[in-house]
Length: 155
Image 1 (tube, rainbow, N blue to C red):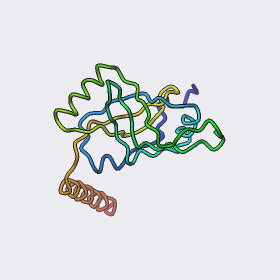
Image 2: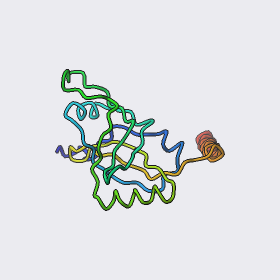
Image 3: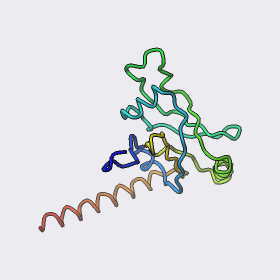
Image 4: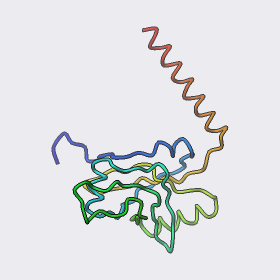
């Protein structure tokens, strides 16, 4: 790698997840992708907005993640909305499965990035927000923005 280049390259983030959920814990998982999908992800043609993770038969999958077909991919392109397998240790998957079943939490993809050339997905163990929680967050954000604005005005 080049001397000035960072080893972590972010390609997509799920901002809606932070608006709709409280993120309690985060985990890193590899994504099982085909060649043309990797090229599309590198180009940033990925949408995590309405995606979620499910655990089935001891394996974890990401659903609803849209990866646009690669323009030069022709016959090698896959279905953009296909269910993709995630790569995690069996122990972690079993712990996540028991936590989601007992406490009623959800697994939401938060971001996609590359580490040393490998695509990784950051998964959040999340609890849904109620409408009043969302309004609270917006009010706090607005107040913080007003305070910063007033400080900038005095300089």
